[in-house]
Image (tube, rainbow over all chains, first blue to last red):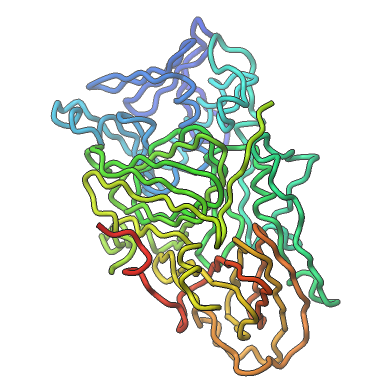
Length: 330
Length: 165
């Protein structure tokens, strides 16, 4: 490996480009390399291969979400665990067969270190025309030798409203100029609410069309914050095709289906054995317990409200086992 | 180009999904449908359909004119069905301690300056600002999803609304 360091940024250990034009990356004892079709991952006791489209889509979410809440399984072998300041990179940790065979492997890294490596790898391995945030129908090919880059797509700014989208000074509404209506939401009503503010209260009397806003989303499976009530965060997202990761919860997570349908395959967080299917239709509300992993399937682009509790005290409660596993007690 | 139809739900037009348990209990998912909850609620009841620590999602059946309420923190109202108007008044005396959670009922008309009015339809989200009094009006039955904190008037009906084994 060639040591490549950017001044002021965490060290990224990358090789010179291979025959296909892509660099290989190492992180602790893990190595990552890609060819025309696949990402290859190795660690001292094993190796793994993933289709490059799935790998890039998963890496994109892990990077965009800053490793999210809990476990981000890229598939049933590799993934990350967020400890909010440091991050585990694992292979086989949540796979019974790998554990029994003792070929599983886990290493812990400072957040900045693994983040820097993932960002560099994603940027290097994403060719021009391929957008890991887009649905397969809406993007170009990830395959082949290195052909340019798509930095603008993979570094999109995540929406994080401080009070609510549309409030003066907060996140702006979406327009045709920046966010045309998605092809699958062409029938969504675009009318805005009537707002009659008395003089002096223009900043406080606020409302917007959330459904129209979501109909203009240019990403899939990427929750963003549109409204805030202290630590209660509304993080709606538009979903099409398959959630590119399998999310292993470390806390209860709530879903509200705003439009269309998503089917969730739910498995045990530790073993991966199947526990339930959850079919959500418009108006349905459901929680994902803290001891499961889940992956969503959306045949048509749909609107999903992910509701999160962003309290900074939750990681400590989780670490001490004080956060509930199940959502309600009846 | 294919024509797609986006499906939303409503009080009179909803189809509920569900939990297909394989090796689990359905109640672990607290599965409900907000339109069904609203269809079985009285006007302006605040029924929790989601709870995360002190935070709740409340479903409100909007019908007629609500009481005046206020909270010490921002709330949001997302209209999921129907048309709802929101009237806002800046209270002369907010009256609630800053750490008071959830909204409280105001007896009679609030004393303060009118802030304005919002008319929101399906999919529209309105800010209910901290320290303001608000009341809703809906000429026809509608449904509001309220982002708030559990308060004295939050109603819990888990045993009635969620799917169980």
